[in-house]
Every structure is written in structure tokens, then in C-alpha cells.
Length: 180
Length: 157
Image (cartoon, rainbow over all chains, first blue to last red; front, side, top):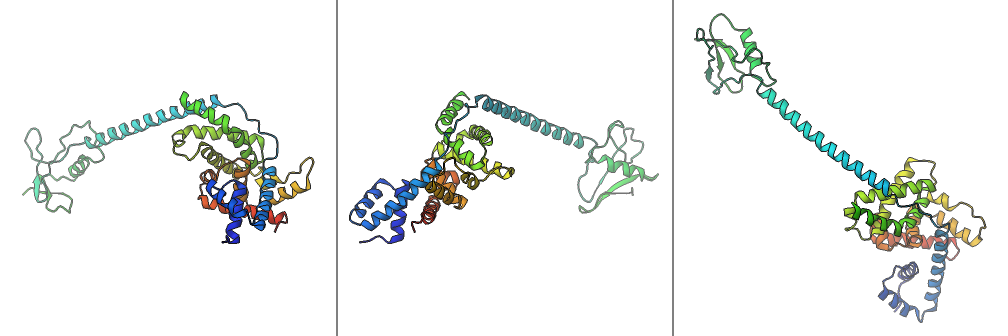
């Protein structure tokens, strides 16, 4: 039984490169024992590999600098330091965002809105007049999501008569109407 | 930290010369090769937990070194590629050896790299596959093609 030429060449190349498993190499040796042509091919391949190895390994032995222990330690220390700074910065950013959201949320009075179709009344402390007035202290600034901005706009548009909040549809904004 | 450093120190002693030779051939410059060798071990220290999962420490280090060397070569045009480094005239040129040298320089870079890692640095087929991040079969194909080309250049075929 003969091995096809391409397979034989690959096996001989792997043998020359030292890439054959031991059992495969043993079987190949048995195969080559009584095949002179195949042995000759193996020798030519071996010469090419030996020549290549001599050229590739040519040159002065590499003189390796000393192990850079100080550099490695400094890089590791710097990396750890930046990691701590990053964590602190992230934590600070989360705290600031939380503080900002909280300030925006509590920036103004929340209207007591019961839902569509209801009317909301806001009483003044002296109960002399039932009108729509903001109930937060004047010193407080309305927050971004605060209902106070809406109240103040409504206050500007308020007529002499008492008014009421009319919100008769969930898809429409509440409006100020006459108190009837 | 000390344990990691000692481990790296051992790897440096064992594989440093081979890595430095490889980086010199990859970049064509001795100074840059030394810097890259140092950077290789900095990167190795960062990813030391991956060493245990690697096929072999040598292949893992060669993979890091190769990545750094290729990036450095792409950044700097004054670095000679491996082929030109191979073609530098020798002091006492042996005609036969020069013929082989030119044949190796004429190989496609992928075949030449595989041949160097096998014959000059002694990596196994599996280690070459890990270092180059390719299948073992591809390593075998590249080596076979390289040897065939050398034989043709040497007049064997």
C-alpha cells in the first residue's frame, strides 16, 4: 500500500519540522524502510528545513536587559490609583445627580390633582378668597418639574373673579375657568 | 503583587531572549525591541489571570509581543519589515546561505512568521496557533507552503 504523494510530502515536512506525534513518526519510519524514493524525498525536505533553521537562528544572541521590576510596580501602582479616582468620581457624579433630581422634585408645591374631570381648589390661609394661588414660600424657586411654574402662569392670567382648575380630559392640560 | 512579580520574573528569564529576538526581527530595531519587550511584560502583568487559561506561557507571551510589535511597526514607517531585515548583507556571505536567506525573505509574511516561530523560537504547532490566533491546521498549511517554496527556490523541485 502506498501513500499518495501529497500526503507523503506533508508527513515528511512535518517530520522535518518536528511536528509529528511519536506514534505517527514510528509508522512513517516503517513505511520509509523499504522505499528509497520516499527516503530521498525526506532527506531533501530535511535539508531545506535545516538550511532555513540556520538562517533564521543567525545573528548575535539577544542580550536581554534586566527585568524591569521598578517599571512594572510603578505601572501597577498608577493603574490602581486611577481606578480609585475613577470610582470616587463615579460615586460623586451619582450623588450630584441624585441631589439635583431631589432639588427639582421638591422645588415647588405639588397640585393636589385627583384626576380628569375633577376640579382642584387651592385655599388661601385666611380663607377670605377662594382663588388659585401658589402655596409655597416666596423664597422658594420653582423646580424644573414643579407645578409652581404652571401655577404662576395661571396667577398671571387670573381674572378678578374666582377661578377654578378645569381638567376634564386626561389628554388635555388643565385649564383655568370661571368658578360657576 | 510579589507573587505575580516573581512569576513574571521567572517567565522573563526563561522566554526573554526568544521574545527579544522575535521583536527585533518584527521591528528591525534593537532599541524599539527592548521597549516592546518591557511593554510585553507590563501587559502580561495586567492580564496575569489569563496565563492559567493559556495553552503555554510562551505562546501567551508571544501573542502579546506580536500584537505590540505589529502595532508599533504600523505606527512607525522607519521600522524595517522582517523581509528587509532578512536581506541585510552579511559579513562573510555564504552563497548557499544567502540563497536560503533570499528565499525566506521572498516568502509571504504569514508563512515566514510561522517558519520563524517554529524554527527559530521553537514553538510547537499548537503554541504557534495560540500566538497567531489561528487554527492548528492553518499553521500546518503555512509551514508546508513555506518549506515547499524554499525547496523550489533551492532548486529541489
